[in-house]
Image 1 (cartoon, rainbow, N blue to C red):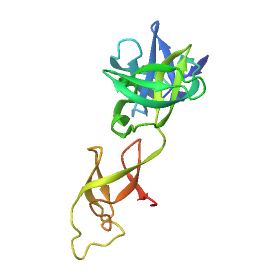
Image 2: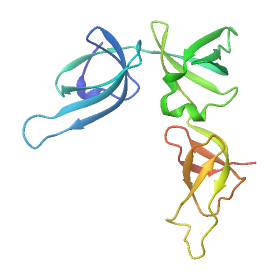
Image 3: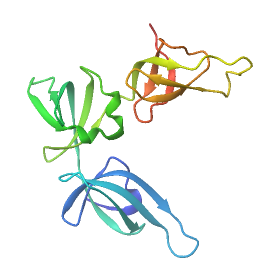
Length: 188
């Protein structure tokens, strides 16, 4: 299906120069002189190579329709994730690279959404939040106010984030999977 280039969004799959690409980031740039254009960072689905491409906002691109399917993560086998279809209990092998920067947030038996184009996996989506334990957190400095000062912390998956001063080592917190940011304390 054809769509205007300025409607390209991260996560979409497009066809360009005879190859399929998944869109990682997009940015509309309006120079001081001339028309606006969109710059798109995308990854080739076959080779995994990344590239940047620019289109004028009025140009059209071929967007491929994706189908979403739910899976349960079983284990990692080399460079592939082994996923189980919860309805048929069949295994599916999907490249770990499709997770991108969200890979550290993958947990055993996690429910995932996989985007498919003509049966081929093109993207994996984790749940929006996960619960992790804080393994390292700086002590509270007297005089800090809770309203604006966050402190650095390290999570059980190795990701570094910022947490409010009242969070201590050993506590379990809810974290966003897209950027690793603190949401709230986990309910016990």
